[in-house]
Image (cartoon, rainbow, N blue to C red; front, side):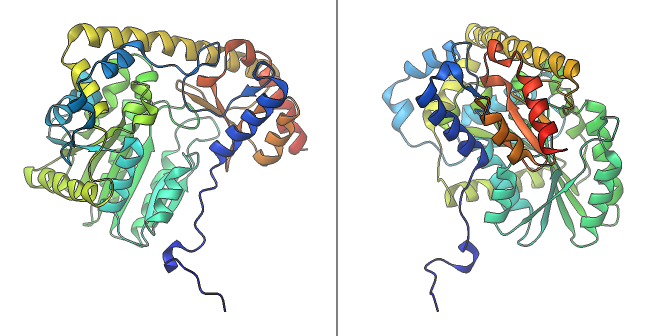
Length: 414
């Protein structure tokens, strides 16, 4: 008999990430035949038209001018006080909902999702999200001994599938007293789809209807890509729906500095709560601060201080907005071209509204991606299809790509 060295819950766990695996294959191909001959559609970060990583100039400037103690001193476990206040305004904008609002600094948006799963579900419970989802949701659930289930995201006519969501919520709540629903919007990863404020209102109505019998619901809006989803204040109108929730429905928001501030490697974000009561708000703060102490203890002080410095200076804020607009336009141009060419060649894709990614439905995405490798195109195979990172592909390489993907998908679905 072989004796395992790890605890039972850890046996068999291994991080075989499709995204990083596909990127590694693209990097290896670039070494052999030259980067100019490879289309790397795997990277979830903005690259310019020379395929260099984009860093917003104002962010870089402010970060590099901090004092030593602003980089290296321990930060409070909950986060810098100014950061916790300013990140609320930065996230919600003009649509800050009424209610008791608190924030906790987290290790990126992923840290916010981690704390939500850990503190708002129990072991063996099921977390719900859409059938198109960011793969680490499942990894996070499994690592904490939770399960992940999905509902169909879109109807045949590409509308949000409220009926499927409602059926799944009802099904899960027959088995447990609490449900956590994660919705990644706007500019959904991995599809680029976005829910409207009216859509979110209807989602909340479903949760209200299904929890009238004393059950509880937690709605987590994962808004990692919100700053590249459209006009700043327009895309934030979804947050107004978090006001005046009943006490048995909790509204949470996972916010990230990775995308909006191009600080991917600094691992800084926030989990925000809009609570119906002061007691519920304090409970949110207490339990999540405790979890921070029990995981990373405290997070990147320099990243928090960079945001504070920018948000306290109107000129720096204006500079950031202008820089973001430039790169939003760059990604939109790529997305518009891909969508146009997809329509022309008959390639079916999930409706792309905005953001870093678009996705193509496919029954055998791994095989289709293997075929694309012959054209030196590297994309990410997902459970439901193929993810294409528009944020990372120069426009000259986007041209003609849809037709090649169509050919690969057709080849595996004959």
